[in-house]
Each structure stands twice: as structure tokens, then as C-alpha cells.
Image (cartoon, rainbow, N blue to C red; front, side, top):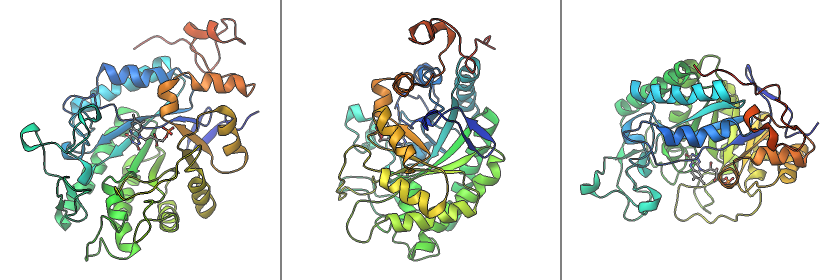
Amino acid sequence: MSHLFSPITLRGLTLANRVVVAPMCQYSAIDGVPNDWHLMHLGQYAVGGAGLVFTEATAVEPEGRITPGCPGLHNDKQQAEWERIISFFRNYGAAKIGIQIAHAGRKASANVPWDGGTPLAENDGAWRTVSASALPYADGWHTPHALSGNDLAQLKTAFVDSTHRAVAAGFDVIELHAAHGYLMHQFLSPISNQRSDAFGGHLAGRMAFPLEVFEAMRIAAGDTPLGVRISASDWVADSSWTIQESNVFCTELKARGCDFIDVSSAGNSPQQKISTGPGYQTGFAQAVREATGLPVMAVGKITNAIQAETILATGQADMVALARGMLLDPRWAWRAAEKLGEQATFPPQYARSSPALRGEPIPGNPPKAAD
Ligand SMILES: Cc1cc2nc3c(=O)[nH]c(=O)nc-3n(C[C@H](O)[C@H](O)[C@H](O)COP(=O)(O)O)c2cc1C
């Protein structure tokens, strides 16, 4: 059996294989409410043979959206639409579905990428952004409001409320977004956190708010597996967030009941200098895996089956997540399985496309009646 198509258990949940569809913003929600686009986007992956599919960054409050098109999970209407998507997974898919819970902090209030991705202008509906310190992400970006102690308590409650909603909606997995320069990362990194109170300064101070949020989410999540996506490094030379600090942070997360780490990098500074290439972040995943013993996801320019299998077989990671490769080929897992001599799950409606199946339904993806 290949490593890629062997099951893995996170807390009480077993994934059929180690192929993960990474979170991908779609900028297509209205008032934070997901819709048919999200049903189509996530639905194609529900039936595409991956073990786990993540939603995009989903905000805990309206001000936490990156753009006006980003979804949320803080009201009943949003929850009902997420439930519709989850119901599709249950009725037709074999994959599990995870939600990425997020707050964009100082990188919120931006235009969607196809309108430039720049900060929203006042007359385009810009909103007040928040962060650890009143430092804009870059020239021309909104100067965020530095969160007070009271603000932090309210925000923690928002993360907890969204977690409760995620569990109630039926998500199989929850991931806290602490990467890519969004709010949790803004607290962790000395680039964006220059506070002099208990939530800034030395490493313990910078980790304090993200760890408090995680602890509260852990209680709210109950038995649902809860992990964290980190940026393992800012890719900035001086006074920045590093893999060494990431290892300490992830060790603290483990002590608080974290079930996995999704290891990405960068996003907190326009000064970053990244050397990209195939599997360019995989070394970070391996470092976190070795430092913590937690299951880790590697992500970043993983595009072919042999590469993915090698990452797992050589102990660099426990799961692989793909984003752009999955946009290009939502059937990536089917092809990877064929390449590795495995049989992915196909919905019976599509079974005739599998060279090995000749139309036979696959256990694990049986036809089910819609609710
Ligand atoms: C269209 C698109 C949207 C993305 N949105 C998110 C997101 O919502 N949350 C997140 O953590 N990463 C997001 N990412 C980053 C991906 O999850 C992934 O980490 C990154 O693209 C590297 O993986 P890849 O080389 O397989 O694309 C996004 C990437 C793409 C291409």
C-alpha cells in the first residue's frame, strides 16, 4: 500500500487517505454567506478522491474578512448555507470536510484579487481593521486599530462562537488560520507585534493571544479534530518569525490538545524573500514534525504523485495539501492513485472513467439518497 493512500486518524476521525485540498479563497460570498459557487467548488472535491477538503478562510466576524467576497461563520444564514454544502459531502462524497476559521486583521478590507487586491477605498466600503499593533501591512494599507484587552476578550468569544457553529453545522475538522500574515500571525511575529503589554514583546507574550484563542476553541470543538495552519517563517532576515519560534509555538499547541499542524509560510511582510520551488515548504513541515511529534501537513508546490508519496515515505510529513494543483485538476487524487497502483474512491456515476473499475461502484463512496 502507498503512504499517500493509507488512512490516517486525527483524534477520533479517520481520513481514507492523506491527500488534502488546501484552503482556497473564492471571494464569491455575499454578506459572508456561501452559495452555489462554493457548493460547486467544494463539491467537486467531495467526489474527487481526496481524504480531506478544506473550506477557504472563513471569518469569525464581518471585519475579519479579507475582502467583501469572503465568507463568515457567525450568523444563522451563513451556518445554514455551510450545512447545505456539508450535506452534499455526506450524501455524495467520500471526503471529509474541514473549515478554516480565520480573521484577517490588518490585511482585511481589501478588494478581491481580480479588482487588484488593494486596500478598499473609503467610498468602496472600507471598514476599520484591527491588529496587534497600529502598523499597516505595507505603504498604502489601512492603519489598523491596536486591539485593547477588552477587544481581545470579545474577539476570543467570536472565535469560540464560530467554533461552536462549525461543530453544530457538522464540519469534520476545524483549522485555526494562524498563517499568511493574518491576525494570529500578526500577534506571533515581531514584525507586526510591537506591543509592550502581556500580549507582545518576547516570544511568550507574542504567543499568548493565539494560544488563548486556541485553548478556548479546543474546549468549544469537543471531539472534533482541531489543528492550526502556521507560517513557519516570515522569510525576512531580521527580527521576524522563524522556524525556531514556530517549533516552540507548535509544542505549546500540542500541550493544549492540537491534533495537527498545517505548515505553510510567509505573508506578513512585503520585505519577504522566498525561495520557491517544488516542495519549498516541506522542510518546515519536517522540522515541526520532528520538534513536536504532531501529525503535519506539507503544502506548497506539491504537484505530482511521486513527489507527494516521497514526502510521506521519507517522513517529512503525514499528509500533503494541494491548492493550485487541485484547481488545475480536481481529479488529481484519481490520477495519483492510478500512478501509485492504488484505487481511489469514485462516485458510481463516474466509475466508468476509472480504467480499473469498468463501472463497478467503490465501497466508501456508495450512492446515497439526497436528504
Ligand atoms: C486561489 C487561492 C486561494 C487561497 N486561499 C487561501 C486561504 O483561504 N487560506 C489559506 O490558508 N491559504 C490559502 N491559499 C494558499 C494555499 O492554501 C496554499 O497554501 C498555497 O497556494 C501553496 O500551495 P500550492 O502550491 O499547492 O498552490 C490560497 C491559494 C490559492 C491559489
